Length: 171
Image (cartoon, rainbow, N blue to C red; front, side):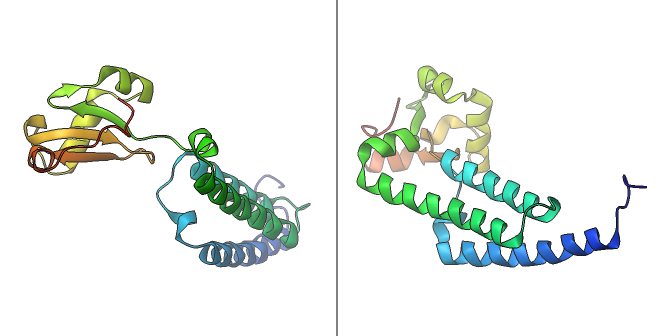
């Protein structure tokens, strides 16, 4: 019987803590601002996974009290703010925590070293180009793999209109 159902008390606990934990997590995320919910880089992804794990533990682990779960949420979101604050002020820490954008296609050529380092294949670049409305790479001047894993597409006309600053990009 324990595999399918333990008790009504256990179900009630999951319901109450699930609702209260969810409300607490949403309020903390709203207080913390848009940064917590932005497109994810590696650091933000880890925080998101840790928040989900903490929420799951709060709901399902009988040894975790609501206050413990809320404290875990607060610590994780607080650490995200501390690390973000520090990376704004320290270029060394920024290089350790954040990725740099990578130039993966430029002037009709794939940048193989950058693609290999970023673990990107030509098909992914071509798919991102199609997703941006280009039939092929003919009218694309550059493709940049951004720090959040998305691709930025720069058209030939945009590239010709202004000099593309690739100095800050890993090639």
